[in-house]
Image 1 (tube, rainbow, N blue to C red):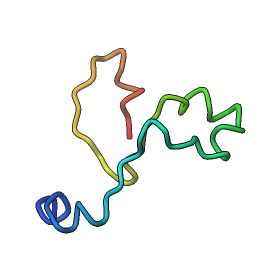
Image 2 (cartoon, rainbow, N blue to C red):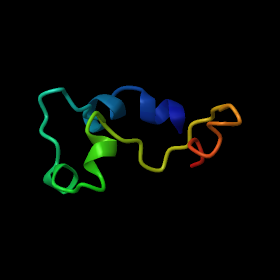
Image 3 (cartoon, helix red, strand yellow):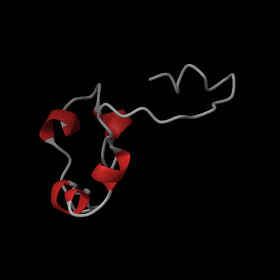
Image 4 (cartoon, rainbow, N blue to C red):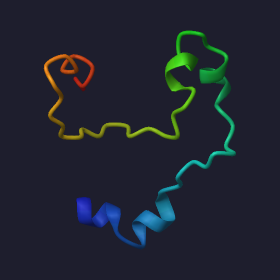
Amino acid sequence: MLYAFSSSPFYNSQVQLPTMSDPIPPKIHGNPKRYPFFKDALGALDGTHINCSPSQQEHQAARN
């Protein structure tokens, strides 16, 4: 699946990366609970788990 989703033609036709000039969605920009955390975000990986090895202090922040 990884190979199928990350190779042409699927990736080139289905994946659209955000640019620096894309506006921040109003749902995020207008919400004081969300904007401070997402103001510098360029995109999101929905439903994707990334294997990582955080330190003990960062363990809670790296949980799903």
